[in-house]
Length: 403
Image 1 (cartoon, rainbow, N blue to C red):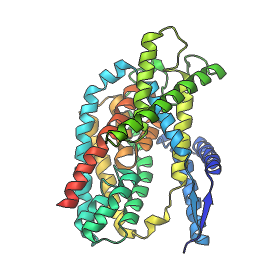
Image 2: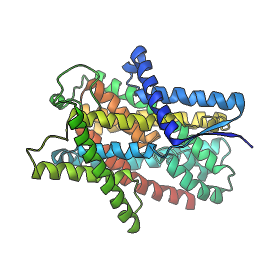
Image 3: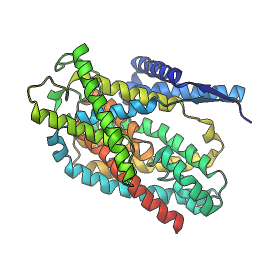
């Protein structure tokens, strides 16, 4: 039996901060990482994951991080996305939202076709292709774990859970690496610029120097934290009510929605109140929360779970990545109008098609820090990945498994 080294929650958070700062220091010194918009927590998180893998290989002991606090950073970040959203942005996001919904469904179907073909090629049951496809990729670890038992029962495949987790793990790594380069190619090839550069960056502070609206001080930070905590508290309550009604949604979804409501109701009722939305303090806190979440997520990856699948996972995930890149560049980007927002959404879509919503947002954040803001992108993509993906994915996976 493999011996496990368990890292308590508080120490895991502390290590997450160290991992993030390590990634930031490396990015500051390695120009190619900045050039291709690789997020700082991705750099540090993958380095930490390799260190954890080295411990496993040399000692045979797994490192298990307790990550209870990580979820707080996630809901805090999405509450910040909601708090930063204006009603005009939501209205303007209607058309790209509808396009992304259709493209997401197309991606789910294509991933499962590629997964099924790859599964058969390497001697797996065709139905197990969903674990090489949308269950583990666009669905992520949670969906893979949820569906693995049913796939195992339907196919007789031993180790279905391990297969799903391994594919989701490698998919998350790939998702974190492809979004920035995709956006760089599109933006520079088409000479694109931000639609609203005068606003400053709305998620994270800009990488380049320039005018910053408002001050960052103890009052502005406390004001933002109060509104974020209220959004999270009400989001928890809404999540419980939604669950009791029989609808399962990730916790960050009601926190995002409550943030949107708070921001727009506050602006309508108290237009002269000290600002919270579109402020440097909100940008700073949102980037901190996302960076901490992603650093902790990546440093805890168990990369050794991938090794047992060998050539199969390399070939199939290679095909999935190639499809995603080509689909984003030659289908999604043109359909979204070939503008700057389309390029930012391309980076995000590449992130959540292979990984998860936080990875998508990290990709977009790295891009907008360098090239300029795109507020609508940060509202549209989480709504697609939160509301639509789980439902559509479940329908498609169920159809494949029951076929």
